[in-house]
Length: 428
Image 1 (cartoon, rainbow, N blue to C red):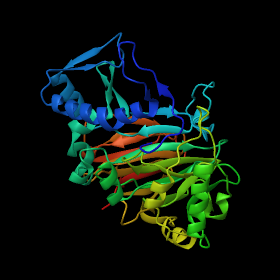
Image 2 (cartoon, one colour):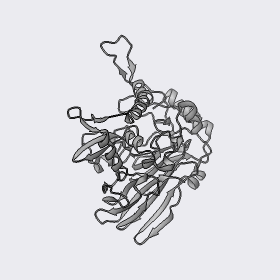
Image 3 (spheres, rainbow, N blue to C red):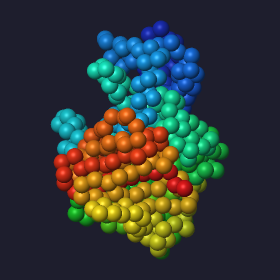
Image 4 (tube, one colour):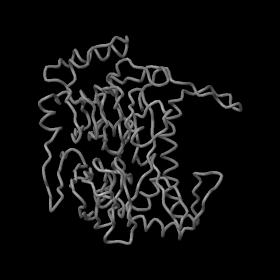
């Protein structure tokens, strides 16, 4: 988190240094906000000048390819679906759903997050004549440009980043997430120098009985009283009943909740959330985390001042139900398939749709990238039609990235069972 930390672990200085030890969170901040930015800029400049590219992910067996081979491979990738390589993190509220579905190690304490596409942290694999290579996703974005991102995704405001992130929040057999908010354009620009704000959305893939999503304040909430209790909990560690102040909505599979910046929110326990959000992240401002320790045994950071600075207190139950949980609207259809718009707002730059089909559906990027996540059905096969790209199978819950340049393609139910696929695109 960019703000605050409580009782952080201390990172010991090296034996050759007389400098004092630094808190672990300081090192993490430096890696995210200094080192990565500097090194990513350097990497992008070197991609234009390189003679060879070395994949050093396996230090015992580095792999090198020539500039020509690199370009040929990446040009082929622009004509094919791409499967990012997810990574997983436990957390204090983490659940068991991802461990089961993704066949994660049984000794993993839980799985709170699966990061399926977050440009600064995601990699992907590619096959070059039988050799599997692994590349950081920012290399793909830098090389692909408009071929990957399309006209909308490559706008100057996104600063050359892949603008959308995809991750899972798993509280199935877990606990409630912290109550939180995210900064709007003005705040995130003035305080953190980020080019765009942190809008989010929750798509419910699976739910347990009694599950709910926290979203907005209740109509009758006394703002001053709520703030007093939040600040007292942060300072004096006195708990309070957040359910008296924060609105909640029962959740079920197929629901989508839009979460524009400035809205108090959090997933309740018993949810498997597919989070579709702006790439800008780690600007999560906590109101209340139930005085719950993190996995390190220390209380998690609370940022009540900053959280209230960005909170839009007018977003209450009635407004939320009218504006942030929209009814699906059919926008296209044919024999054996339909496409529904399930979430779109004028102040959010992406929109969420759902494809429902019995066996197959024909698609066209029309010059913009698509993100596809099968949420019903065992797996899908994505087949390019306008290019010589390779077909790719995407299992249930996983992600396929469709480059803007791929053009027409077919989505087919690999096993012949009915499928539903969440489709994320840039809003027009």
